[in-house]
Image (cartoon, rainbow, N blue to C red; front, side):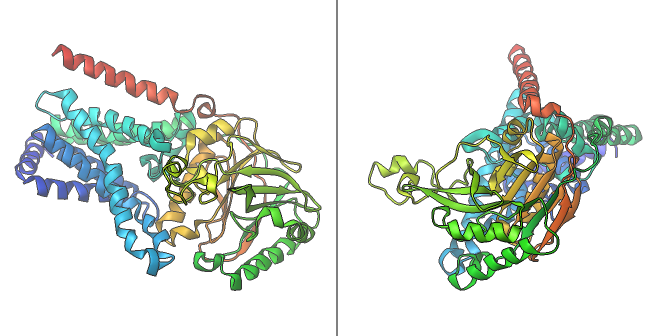
Length: 507
């Protein structure tokens, strides 16, 4: 491809109407999203990013660049987060009408971050050319902002498309945002080579740049770990569909199913039940917990259940000793906005708008978070309940001196397609980032055993009941990301941004 040919493509894109440009941008975003599970077409992510950057390069003014960036984000998030409609379909008659609004609102809202990156890139260059490399910096920075702002939502990071490749290993250095930025920068540099040089040399240089994320991951390499521990874990997956999970006619069936799996085969050291696995409040479950311990035959048991403290309710992980007594409780700290609580619900309560505040028991209350759970058979464990597993920096902070991460979840809310599979990919990345094995017990799947390098050693498929007996995989040495978090990549991107602003002001 010659520079003249690519320039001709850019000119034709620039000649399109704004509506058509936005449509092409949405398509490029959808192609980029095909790298995420369940499609897992990594090549599509690189192609989509490149196409989006070429389209942005054709923007003639800051307004056009902003709209193109927004369309690019809409396509990316709409396809990546298609699972967001699933909770509204559990009770279709009552909530189904909200599903399209949830997807459109989420995709359109998150796309504003990409619009901001595009707008800033156009503003900071101001030389008649949209620089893809500066866009990589801008988008890398706003993606980090997305992970923190308004309690954060770091789902669908570009890095996750590289799971099960060498590129993923780079996350153990400076985290998934570093991996995302390296991917962005490599595509941006490739596009710049094709725009400026073209020909065989330009194509070759572009190919070298696209290989950069994999080269860095190859240099970092997998963690060195020892042999598995002589500790046997049993991970339960009862497969309770969400529309039946709390139905009195079925709740006892699912509970008994877990009792039967707990007592099956030879005794183990620790038995793990998924999130909200016991359909009773902890406050009134003494006899039930004794039944669980009896079935475990001397093993420690970790169960997910709810508990109350006055008017407040908590989504909790409860550790039981060999006789069914509660040894430790971990309350979920990072709750799902609008799913487990309403933001500012306690403030609205003061104005007479009730039924939203956790202080009235209408929403879950938040636990303290960041506290390990100690199990006699294992030692220190990082407890995670569902949504908490998507926050890399918070998990890394809690991981010091731990032997493993334990995630219990109820992905039945999120259907049978993208949601559970993308959630599993994020669990793989938490293992790579921290150098700790991850054990994942999911109500309807996907339950899995993941080693310290993010490799899935064993798993149960979606919508199947069963259990996994596994030896606890060994942990690696503490990773750099555990010690630094996101600070290095944030400082690096801010430095480049400040230098770019300084140059613009001089011009």
